[in-house]
Image (tube, rainbow over all chains, first blue to last red; front, top):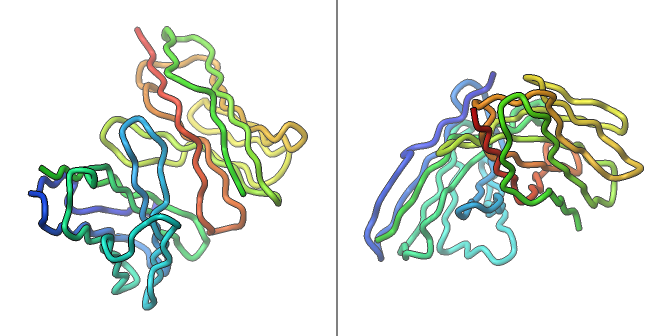
Amino acid sequence: GAVVSQHPSRVICKSGTSVKIECRSLDFQATTMFWYRQFPKKSLMLMATSNEGSKATYEQGVEKDKFLINHASLTLSTLTVTSAHPEDSSFYICSARDHNYEQYFGPGTRLTVT
Amino acid sequence: GNSVTQMEGPVTLSEEAFLTINCTYTATGYPSLFWYVQYPGEGLQLLLKATKADDKGSNKGFEATYRKETTSFHLEKGSVQVSDSAVYFCALQETSGSRLTFGEGTQLTVNP
């Protein structure tokens, strides 16, 4: 089946710094990728929809200047958490949509901001 | 708007017990319905899906039937194993390829 990777799998950063998370579709092209955030023992919250070659569409309440999304190619989308704070600590999961409109999820990135 | 409601967990069962995790939904149209499974520290894996009323999705001994009249998509398994311990998410998708709306997730623990 289709494989989606995320890098890094875990990252610890200091408050005030920026962190970039990569989401790659390894064996298919994805014009659309989705970024989710998952709080402990909670469901997934859609943050934004990332479209290749155009601006991301953010969900209500998600700060676009804080969570920068770049979908630079058909196999790569990046999420940059800028000026991270402890409350940004979370599990971030991406999914990528193939040409059949099937969505495949990445393994997630655990971000801890100290 | 669309929403998904799952039975609250956690659910703890003994091995070989019968499992039911309830899921009901609210949607304006005729969505596709999904069950995803998340093992500790990992992302989500698609377990099964159904795209229209009365369809039954099945995989690895799990089943769920799309019931339009009760707007439900309950997950069942006849005999659970320790390896089934995970968090299970019910989700809907209004149109093919669109955003997924997830339920709160149900933690399942199966004891030997």
